[in-house]
Amino acid sequence: MSDLIGIGILIIFGALFAMSEISIAAARKIKLRVMADEGNRKAKAVMALQEQPGSFFAMIQIALNAIAILGGIIGEQTLTPYISELVSLIYVGPLAEQISFFLSFLVITSLFILFADLLPKRIAMIMPEAVAAKVVTLMNGITFALTPLVMTFNGISNLILRIFKLPTEREEIVTTEDIVAMMEAGAQDGSLQQQEYHLIGNVFELEGRTLPTAMTTRESIVYFDINDSSETISAKILEHPHNHFLVCDGHLDRLIGSIESKEILRQLLKGETAHLDDNLIKRDVFYLPETLTLSEALNAFKSAAQPFAIVVNEYALVVGMVTVKDLMSSFMGNLVTFHGEEQIVQRDANSWLVDGVTPIVDVMKLLEIEEFPDDNQYETLAGFLIYMMKRIPKRADYVIHAGFKFEAIDIDGIRVEQLLVTRISETKSSDDTLAPLED
Image 1 (cartoon, rainbow, N blue to C red):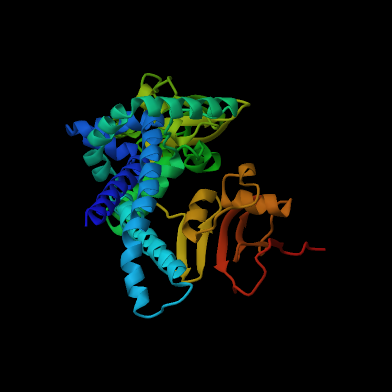
Image 2: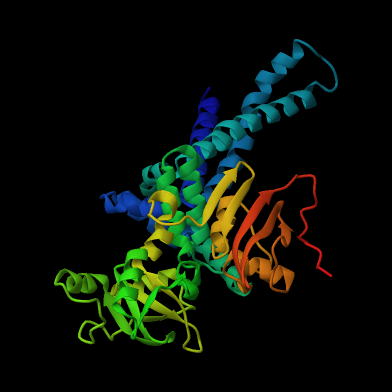
């Protein structure tokens, strides 16, 4: 009977050490830090143990191996007599002893696998932080009690790791991929709302998108010429009711400054003709290079406290204009609707009308396309079509990629105004296909 109690005690200790090993290894530092900020001292102890786990794992291995050896010795001696009696009821012969030994080995091994290893580890994997916080104090105490053995084995293992130039301490770095994986898991189990999931995803996209994906392109900028008449100024304001207008001398690359439309309105309310008074023109124009990411642009706006910026290329030519509203629209995605013309309009379940200047990242997200070929060579869907065809597209030219047909349907000069994107049959080849060149 005492041997059976001994086996039970060994199984309990084996389960305790197995749970401790898995829980402390699997406990997430982010969640432990939250627990520590809430005043849980044991969570701090777990984080300290994770930073220098060598002594702990040395103690665990010493304990588990000792339990396994003792379990084999005690178990075989304890169970064999009982199993021999059971075997004798069925079989009496020259192999009875070997059969009894095999069955006793099988029973004791099954008990240890199930109750000292498998179940405890599954429990520890399900709630690693909670289990780790409960066992950390006891494990630190046992590690201290076994200090001589722990130091010996830990020192040898550290020496071997240094010989092979491997790190001896755990360094946990949370990457963007880790955060995205946690967000997806949270969205799937419902702990993270879909709006929150999309919002956080958009935040990460700010680092991967440059200003041309959010700006108003050069040809779409409405500006005042310094020599515009009162009628021209009034007509532009009526047709394009913006808050700010650029003031140029002939063309965009000869930029003078900007003026607020309310200043023109004030002139009209006073009974005056609309004119570009030098005193009303703001000369301090805010410029941003087109190579900036949206995240860097947001930081720049925060420092400059300007409502808009002129985007220029490396040759100091104006390529577009971006406002804080444009950046916020990219950040919020479809969570907030801004009034204005939509770049993507769905015609039916398998086709979309897409503006040529639509950022390629937005198309990828909408159509769930993982990648476009050489997507670092262009920013927009029109750029993709031009890059793939190696020429300026004509109306009805198309490219097939990832099961979708991208067809130019509206061409203004050399500018691709609009494309028709159609989902094609899945039986067709997924390789990129170009429309045949015209003779």
